[in-house]
Image 1 (tube, helix red, strand yellow):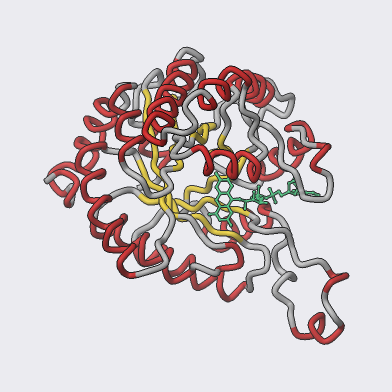
Image 2 (tube, rainbow, N blue to C red; image 1 turned 30 degrees about the vertical axis):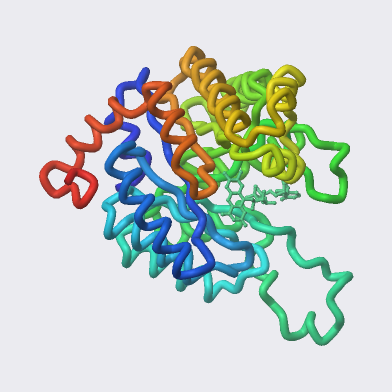
Length: 333
Ligand code: FAD
């Protein structure tokens, strides 16, 4: 189903969560993830799952293979990510057709890596390579999907609570810079906003406030789903916060620094930290049920502990049972 339809079935003050997976590179990796997904689907009942897309279509067939597993075989509502820059219209068309054939009704419409700059392409390439022609920004993809498919797909777009830096000017990182483009994406037909990961709840509060109160009114009732990443290791955290430009509050960093030599302790402190963020977000209220999106990195343990400890499972499980009736595929046993 569409994510928006499932959300409409939740109580307004309810909670839900989603889990993100990326397609493994090898068959062995795929088989491992398959087992893990079976367990997680049965135990956790996410409202939906996300399958990532390699920029430029680099994981196209593997992403679709994983999406087939989650949507078809496991009966999990799947949101397929799709990037449009450096991709031909043929690939986008083919992917949307394949997604539809699999029964997928949700697409996260993204730009992906920045467009290959004209400056760096030689003249031959400029002649032959027209892959930048159709799509430059994520909004181009949102418009294209709406034009080709009407309301068939529920469309999500990316938001950045701490701003989005386009390599060129990291010092100008500020969520306000992105705002006109987020308005544009939403006006073009986005149904929900899913965000970059963050650890700074103050940054989140300001962001959500800024959107809800925006003069355009386009964010008044739209679901804004916070992205949260359980800390899997000290090194991964360092790398990811650098890539995503997420700030780690000083006291949060101090707690992780205190145990940085002990991988198990880092994970446990990481679970505590995310649980505290979830509990904070739960207190905020708002016009839609409160969602939480977990970047799982294809791992099971931390996210399981978080959704159990924060009591996120029960409500969604009930709704999913009702929605699925007796046809609920593997998930309902
Ligand atoms: P856009 O909305 O197009 O914005 C890109 C940048 O350009 C922003 O800085 C914006 O301010 C600026 N901009 C937008 N429109 C204009 C305009 N008209 N004129 C001038 N400037 C403009 N990447 C992947 O490759 N695969 C994934 O599966 C994936 N999943 C993601 C999931 C989430 C939840 C998030 C938050 C990001 C994900 N990304 C993924 C990363 C994403 O592709 C990058 O962050 C990318 O650099 C920007 O994508 P966007 O959709 O936000 O682009």
